Length: 213
Image 1: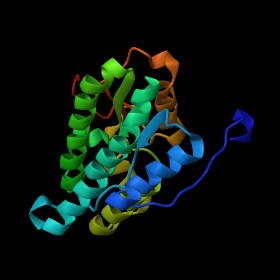
Image 2: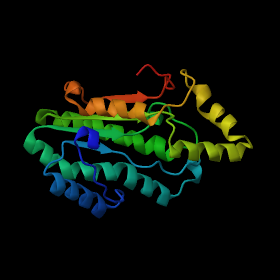
Image 3: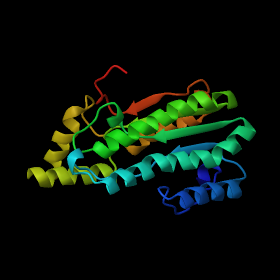
């Protein structure tokens, strides 16, 4: 951050809790005086077959993935409207286009976030607030390592073989993505260079999604 002339400030919050989401947005507005860019991103919900998921798990997933994004947006949109400029980027998953077994919570609830993004793009466009969704595929993150380790244990495989079977064999580029590759798209969508792009849903997945859209 020093090289860019910016400042990074950390704030601890559970965006699945209404009071935390509101407190986080208020903190940012008070600290910086405005919010230009909002990126909504939360950890993935537990894996498991749909038939085994409990009401509590569904409610937690909706609260964290969907309501968290809704509450943060609701808190910062007035500031963006006042300055007639803003970027909202919702981070979802390539599973909204390419559902995976045992990820029912993520498959379903993240798709609701895409619907939110598309609706916001329509409603906020007149205020010059652009809204897009990014759908990362298999990116080398702690979440992916957790899913891979679970699969390896269930199937009696080494971690490397599990990674190959579960992810790499499905990716035309033949490797996992890196966080920096995902970040490059987020930075572009947040910039003035993306000033005519809104309502889009963009995967960063090395070609894993087979569908044409």
